[in-house]
Amino acid sequence: MTLGLFLAACGGGDDTDETNTGDNGDSGTETDSGDSGSEGDSAEAEFESDTWRFITEEVEGQVQYVYAEEFAKRISDKTNGAITVEPYEYGGLGSETDQVAALQDGAVEMAVMSPGFTGNMVMEGQIFALHFLFPESVEKTQEILNTSEAINTDLRAQYENHGITPLAFWTEGAMAWSSNIGLEEPSDFEGFQMRVQDSPLMMESYKAYGAEPQALSWGELYTALDRGTVEGQENPVFFIYDASFYEVQDTVTISNHNNYVAMTTVNTDWYNGLDPKVQALIDETVEEMQSWVYEEQDRQNSEFLEQMKNDTEHPTEVIELTEEQRSAFKELALPVRDYYKENVSTVDGAILDKLVGEIEAAME
Image (cartoon, rainbow, N blue to C red; front, side, top):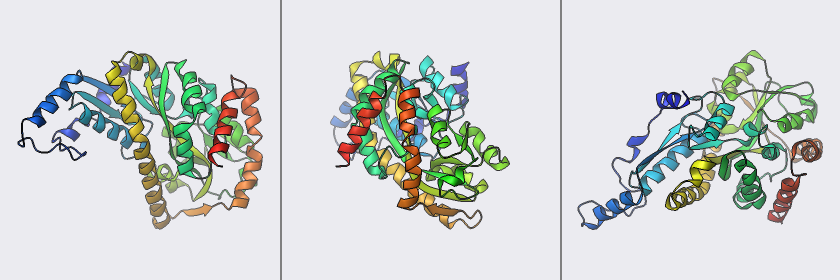
């Protein structure tokens, strides 16, 4: 049934490489000599024909989905079309947690997922819910995500215990808050119905401000905001605008209290069973994509912020917190790290301690 749902919802994408023009600039024309065709035959012979399904938590045009599209294009180019990667939008297999199960069960081979939706399975993954852990600079945060041993080795091993292998961690941009009241100081959160992912630590982070957090899938979020079931939410600017949350929320606060971190993941058994050449192909492409996706999220967040500011049909007040205002939130957020170590971590906070050290070293 799971596989049938995917086949029914398939968005395709196989036609993106039919012309094989070669973005690398070295394909030449097919009539130049016999070498071009020989190289193509060799590339195709090197890889057996295969199809990989790649699910995301976002829809067409949003960062995760265009990431999957770009990944698919690069794999097709490198294998001369022998390997097809099929990106899937959010919703084809239910909620975000349903998609996690699909990857674990092997119904799909690859997924972009958020650690917040695995928080009740991989407890250490909730580390990304800690506010004011990473630098305010999104660029510096991405550098840390690229190089951190705590994340890319220690945390990866935690996920592999559950049949999921994260190949890369990357930011979709700094978080912002949307609301109808204008969130500027901790007292604004008193009794506030804040939507969060299904992560105990996310809930604790907002309880520290006095909020009353509620776990909710993003597929239900627009309606919940419109009806007042929840009063606010957090996401990068591009997502707030593209998902039309700004239509039912009057203000967006640029708080930079956190980054939205996504993971490029694979089913562990599938990945470990691949030919080493295919594994190397995936690893190489994932590594290339780190700089690409940083530029893509930066473009989308910048462009959507301008659109939001200039939207006269649904005017949105954009509030940018001062350093003093951010400090008031940070003071309340820091003790949540102790909660993480004592109530969430299964390794006595060892991954958090190592990551904090790495962040401090990166900021020197």
